[in-house]
Every structure is written in structure tokens, then in C-alpha cells.
Amino acid sequence: ISTTQSWCSGIIIIKRQNNFNTMKTSENTSLSPSVRVRPGRYDGEAPWETYEGQFQLAARTNGWSRAEMAGHLAVALEGAACQVLLDVLEEDRGDYTALAAALQLRFGVEEAPDLMWERLALQRRRPGERLGPVAADVMFLARRGYPTFPREAQREMALQAFLKALSPEELLRHVQLAAPTSLEQALALATRAEAVFGVTGSAS
Image (tube, rainbow, N blue to C red; front, side, top):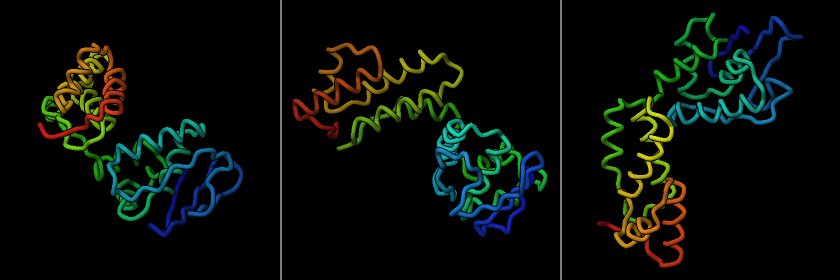
């Protein structure tokens, strides 16, 4: 696929060498008739990694090739994110890997593993914070801080960090007495205890 654009105008022309006719798309039309899940627009305000996960899920669901992924990604860009179409060579604008790399450089939030280790060790529940985000944060930090570790080791570290982050003290004791073996179990126990006993996160 080769792609040309009236920059950031919302219209992209996709020329397919191996398909039928040139297709023109806009915000209100589909690039492909086989789209079942449509990824949202991306303007660079959210971290690229967050949007990339959503986009790749849509690509798998729709069965897109790498070339089709590049076309759909280019169409989805708006605002400041459109700049990446100027960051890559013209011949690479139909290359998903090249577009994703350019977006990572501009909008990625990749942090060094040692910073992730420190954040995991210091993670604490903030006053009034819901338990779900606490669990999600420790799992994210365990995976990013220890990317080469086996998945089970990452999950064990996330479990221990979640327990360490729990507050108030009576909630922590209740969960520890149940001896959860996974982060999911610990989260379920803590959520149930809050609902039954009325304990909520508070300052230590």
C-alpha cells in the first residue's frame, strides 16, 4: 500500500497494488468493508502504548494484514499525531512498523526498568482510591519492571506488592489471613471485605 495525504485534513488516499480500486476514506467512511471493530481516533494526548494495545486488538479482530494496519492507523491519526506522517519517509508510510516506531518516539512513555522496580516497591493505596486501579498498577509495574521474568514470577511480585499497598490495616489483615495465591484472589477478597465490613482506603 502506498499512502498520500492532504496532511491532517481527515482524508487519506490508499492505493492498493493488489486489490480492486483506489479507495478514498474520511472520518465518516470505512477504509475496508470488513471492519468489525473500529479503533478510536488518536491525537497523541494519551500514551501511545495505551492506544497501540487497543489498535492491535481491533486489527486481530478484523484480521488485518500489516499493510492494512498501516492504512487504518494513518486514517486514525489526528491533531498532533498527524505529524508522524512527516516523520517517516514517504515510502514507509504504508509500513505499520515504521509508523508505530515514529509514534513511540513522539508519544511513548517507556520508562527504564529500574524506575519501574522503585515504583513497584513504593506503591501504596491512596486515600479513597478504588482497589481495581491499585491491582492494575502493580501488575503493570511488575511486567514493565521485570520484562524477562516468567509470567508466574511477575504475578507473584504483583500479588506481594498489592498486599503491601493495601490500607487500612484491618483490610490488609483480613486479606492476609485468607492467604490468597493470586492477585485476582487478593483483589476479590479485599473488594468483598470493603463491601461487607465497610472499610475503605484511608491514610496510613
